[in-house]
Figure 1 (cartoon, rainbow, N blue to C red):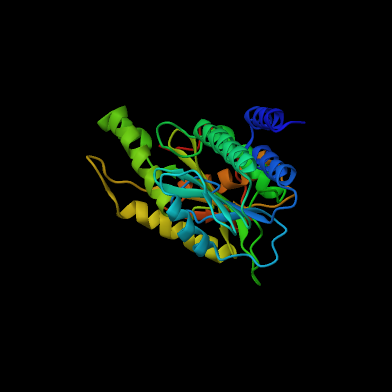
Figure 2: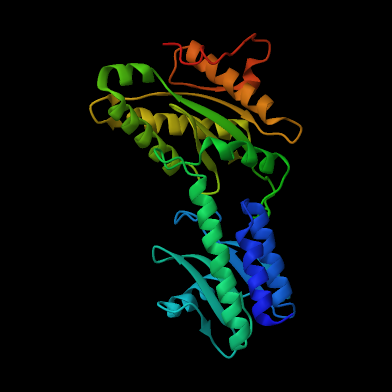
Length: 317
C-alpha cells in the first residue's frame, strides 16, 4: 500500500466515526500502524476545555518519558507552524483559540513524508473530535446535551474511557446528581421566557465553573441539570454538592434576584441500568423538593421512605 493510499484510507476511517471513544481508538491504532517502531506519547484535553490539563491518551516504546512541561515549552516554539522537527524529537501540537489542547511527541526525527502524513491525520482526528463535541452541546446552556447522557453513564459504569486510571490509595468514585431550579415556572410567569433562559444560562455557567474539568455537566431538560462527578466517599460528595448549591444561592441574578436549587444524588455502580440510576437521583430530588427545597438529598438516606416520582410531580409549584 502506498503512502497516499494509506493516508486516504486512514482519513476516511476517521471521518466515518460518530462516537468519540471509537475515534480515539482508531487514531491510536493509526499511530501504531503508521509509526510502529517510533517511541511516542500522545496527549489531549478530552473535553477540549482550557480548564482541563493535558492527559496521556496513548504511548508506545517509551522507556524514559520526558516531562510534559518540557514538551509544552518546546511546543511554544511551534507557534505558527504545525510541526517542530529536531534531531532528537518531532513535536506536533494541536491548538484551539491559541491554546495547546493536544500534543503528539515523537522521540526521534520523522522523515518528511511520515511527518506530513502524521500531521495531516492528527488534524483530521481533531476536526472530527471537535465536530462530535459541538454536536453534543446544548445551544442555550453550552453544556452537554441530553442525548449524550446515557452514553456517558454507560461509559462510566462499565469503566470505559480514554484517561489512564488515577493511582490513588483512596480512589474516587462516580456519582450522579440532578439539579432543579426551584420555582422556575414563577420566573417565566413573572419575568418572561427571555429572562428564564438567562437564568438557565447563568446557572449552567456556575455549575460548570464549580465542577472539575473531568466531570460531566449536562442540561438534562428544561430547568433541570445532571452532573456526573467524582468524590472519595458519600460525605465528600454531599459536601461538594452543598457547596455548589450555596454558590448558586449567593448569586444575585439580573431582575430575578436570588435563585435556589434542589439536588438529589446517588452513587454510580456497574450493575445498574441508566433508568434505575436516574430514578434513584430523581427520588432524592423529589424528596428535596417536598421538604423545603434549596437542599441536597442523598438517595441512600431515603431507605424505608416510600416515594413515587412522576414527571408532573417534580416541580411542586
